[in-house]
Length: 363
Image: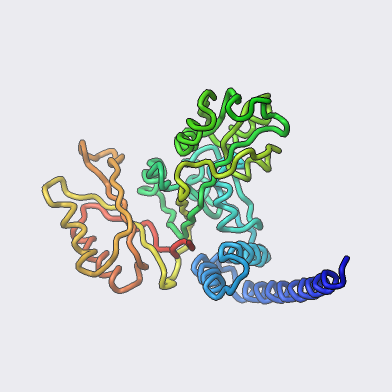
């Protein structure tokens, strides 16, 4: 070992010792804050969002902002766990992108509970068996998740955070399972229907003869590939780790910006951070110009709308062709402009529900 390397490693060891001391000092302070809260929730999404945003914006490198965010997320997670052990339900099984979203947002010091359906994720959080529900709401390629939208209408839970997860689809097989003829000779590929659709062009080019088999989840696809000779799966990094598969090709999705947006729902409210989003759902009278009239309060109060999605009403007394409109606007419901717009909407809309105000996801 050269003297230069030895010297640099000595400096790294010294910094590691300093980091250990600083992290434990932070943990002690967080524990003191928890004691002063007197039972108030340990998880404050607006506070955590502010910390992560401040750290990434003041980052000078060489670490990329997303790496800084990941490091501080785990520090926050470990400190939060000293105050309260959190339980977050998600659409299972283990190894799915939903589990990845839970860990991206809450860190690894959380009890992540895989559940069989989106309905069950809502029910567990509503009953208190889970503190929070993490559910997918839309994908940049495949669009809205209808079941999540339907359940948002009636749930007492409130949206308290959002997660934007870059969806990286990977082709994986058992170690040594690739046939001698390479990818083109693989006979079967398992994956969820959405993942197969997101990798359609890549599969056509690289594995044109492989049978594409739809399964209930990408984790199930990875499990089947682990048990079946010569079979491959398309799934995320976490699935490959859980089932001991080797990744043969990374990021095979046709859209390099493919992203899924998740919502975190719970029984807590959030205060404004200055970079917030408010979600609401409303109905409109079945007459010409009704939707335009409903949207006019947003324009009149200079409230920017970032998303609108229509969905047939599932209410028992709904008339045929009656629709609900799911809308996201920039700002917090306590901001003057948003508050004024909501007050006007309450007078105009036959039905209006504010689903929650929450910090906008870090990019």
